[in-house]
Amino acid sequence: MPIPFNPDKQFLFRVGCHSFPVEWDTLRTWPKLLEACEEDQLDLFKFMELHQAFCCIRIIKSETGGAEDYPPPKLEPTSCPIEHACDLFTYHFKIYEFAARYEIGTLHDLSFHYLKLAADQMSFPLLAGTLSKLNHDFSEQEQTFIQYMEDRAKMVGETITTEDHALVQEDWQFSQTLENFLIDKIVIMQMEIQQLKAAVATNNDESQ
Image (cartoon, rainbow, N blue to C red; front, side, top):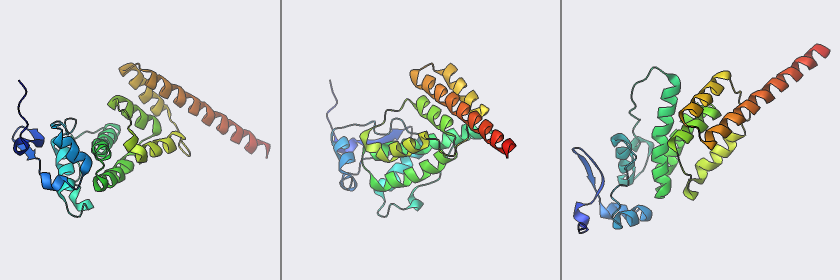
């Protein structure tokens, strides 16, 4: 038998001893989020860690929605720079995904700002491979990030290294999907283009 809907006992997020009940008056500022809560979608934050959910809720409840309400991430310590870059990107990406889905403007802008800062530190193959692992389906609400990825996909001014290719190969071994196959082919073609440009530049220097 389904449990009767009780607005007073509905939670945005709940894990262990941590729980954040729905504040209906506050949510009227965010119609999409309010609608989701009224439809009794209790798993709004099911893909988030506690700290990510806490960040979202602070912005939702904030009157200013400033950067001071967006706390720095708490990540598992790692000595691997690549792993840290991926973790940092993923942390902000999950918040951005939530903000875009429910059209929470202030959270959307803040999370994309930090998301872009993290993504700018990653090579395109690493960024594309990380998104592939997340198995993310882009939605029409994520146009800001889609445009960013379209620009990054051009790889203007970006040099692809053998390390990038090794990471793509590792992703292929991890998950032999069409997506990873195409990323691998793109990386190989980009490296070949770089080699051809380098050869042409060398020939031009020798002929002068």
